[in-house]
Length: 310
Figure 1 (cartoon, rainbow, N blue to C red):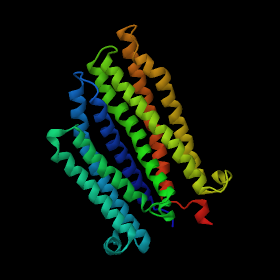
Figure 2 (cartoon, rainbow, N blue to C red; figure 1 turned 45 degrees about the vertical axis):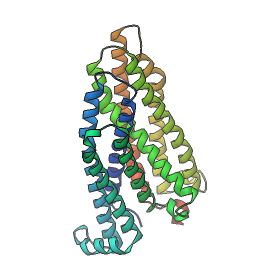
Figure 3 (cartoon, rainbow, N blue to C red; figure 1 turned 180 degrees about the vertical axis):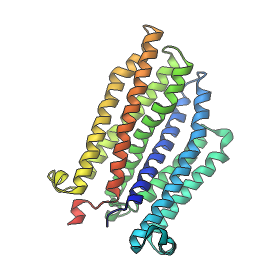
Figure 4 (cartoon, one colour; figure 1 turned 90 degrees about the vertical axis):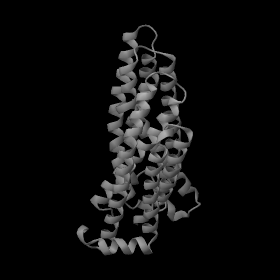
C-alpha cells in the first residue's frame, strides 16, 4: 500500500519540525560554552521559535493518522472520521500514533513549564527525551520494525532518524537564526565565536558519521543489489535522497575546511565578518538541499522496499 499525498506531506512536516526542535536543543547546549552578549538574544529567539515547531509536529501527526485511516478504510479524506477512531482504538499504528501525539504535546508542556529554566540542562533533557521517544514511536510503524522491536534494524533506523534530525536541525537553525544574530551583534573573530562554531562543526561531523554508517546499513537491508537503485520506484527515490545527502555533505565540507576558518580569521574584522556571511550563505543552500532529502525520506517512509514489494 503506497502512501497518499497527505501522508507524504505529513511525514515531511514531522521530520522538518523535529529537525528544528533537535537543532534548537543542540544550539542551547552550545551556548553553555560561551558568555558573549549575543547568547541572550539567541537563547530568546530559540525559545520563541520552538513551540511553533512543536505545534506543526503535533498537527502533522494528526494529519498523518487521519490520512492513514482514510487509506486503510479506502474512503475519502472527509469520510475518515469513523475509521480514524477505530484505528486509534484497535491498531498498532493508531496506538503508536497516539503515543507520538502525546509526546509532542508533552514536549510543548515542558517547554512552557520550564520557561524560567530555558536553555538549562533540565529543559534540554526534558524535551530531548520526548523527541527520542517520539522518534521511537515513529520507527515502530516503519519498515524496520518488522524485524522486531529489539532488532538491529530497528535500533539502526532510530539512530538514523535522530542523526538526520540533528544534522538537518543544525543546518536549519544555524543558517537561518543563530549565526545571523552572531554576525549582527559581534564584529570580528572572538574566542566565544570560535567555541560556538567549533561546537556546530563537531556536532555536524558526528551526525554525518552516524548517518553514513546507518544509511549504508539501511541500504544493505532494503536492497538485494545496487541494480535495484534504478530498477524500482523505491530505489530511484533512495538514489535521489543519497545524491541530495552527498551534495549537502560537500557543502558542509566546504564550510568546515574553508568557510569556518575564514570566519575565524584574525587578520581583520572585515575578513572574519565576510567569512561568517559566506558560511551562512552556504548553510542556507545546504538547508534547501536537505529539505529535498527530507521530502525524499518522506516518500520512502510510505513506499515498500523492493525486497517487500516482490
